[in-house]
Each structure stands twice: as C-alpha cells, then as structure tokens.
Length: 204
Image 1: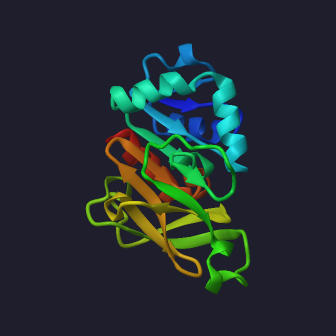
Image 2: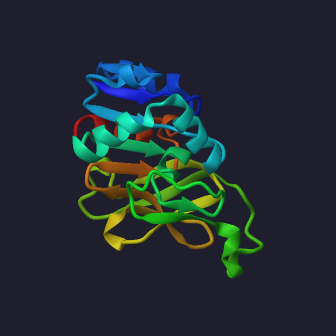
Image 3: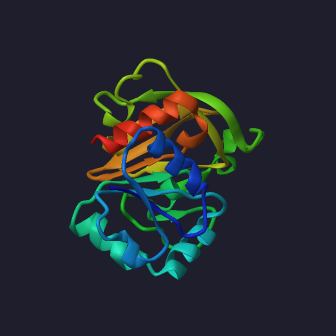
C-alpha cells in the first residue's frame, strides 16, 4: 500500500490520481492511526521549511513516521519541501529537520557567484541520475522534470546524491540514504517522466 502523508501541504490528490491510473493501491494518512498498513510512504510538501516541520509536528504523525522509516525501514519518498525536511537543517529556517538524510538545505543566493541568479528556479530542467539509481529506471539518459524552488539539498555525503540538475551550479535534485528517497522536482507535474518515477518507487 502506497500511503500519502497528508499534513496539510502538497497536492495530495494528484498523487492519488496517478496511482489509481496505474492500478496501484493507494491511501491517504491524516493521522498516526491511518499510517497502519503502509508498505511505502510519500511525503509531499510546498512552502517554507519551518512551516512544513511545524505542520508535520502538529499532525502528531512524526513519532510514528520515525518508527516506520528508521526502525522498520519502510521506503519513503520526500517531494519538494518534503525532500528538504529530510535534511538536518535549512538556511530557510531555524527548526531542525527530520535528519533522515545527512546534509543541509542551502539557498542559491547564499553562494556569492549566484547572487544575481533569478529565483525561484521554475520550469522544466534536465536531470542526470546517478548510475544504478532505481527511481530513474527506464529513462536514465532522457529525464526531464518540473522544478519550483529557491533552495537545494546539500548532501553531507556524496554517495547520497541520487541525481543532479544544473541551475547556476550542479546541485543534487534527488537524494537517497538507504530506504529514504527524496526529489526536489514535482513528479506529479512532470507528465510521463513523473508517472514513471512514481511507478518505479512503487515497485522498489
């Protein structure tokens, strides 16, 4: 069962619709009890880092999610800000992240040579998957996804970078640490590329 974590952020129905079209069982969890039976989790998110952490805390799902992901090793896919809160911290806020993937979230503007870069990074961009990256199976050499963000995930360990894209610099647009996956782009807005990625996640 693919379970979408609904803590008030992200287009939950878009993910539900994709999985229904693929005939893959899907459910939505708005409270801890509804996480029962999940075999995979999707953590969407839009907006600011601290607000996302506050909403997740307020949902009271966080302790159960920690247990499912860190102890039971249930695969989880963070999307957009849902990916960023997988980190330890963010330059966008002051609250600690989930800490499931070592690293921090940085602002493009914090890098001196990028001070004139137009933000947000918005629209379609090429993605270069790391060799053997299971999320990108089937379109390793021809992957394009839709982005909308002003911050990027700076992995503490290079082996956690699952894919890169380029906007002023090469940045990690997908991460992986064991059973934890994250993508900065929006698969639900990325047509057949996004559908393929969500299908790959379901088949891990």
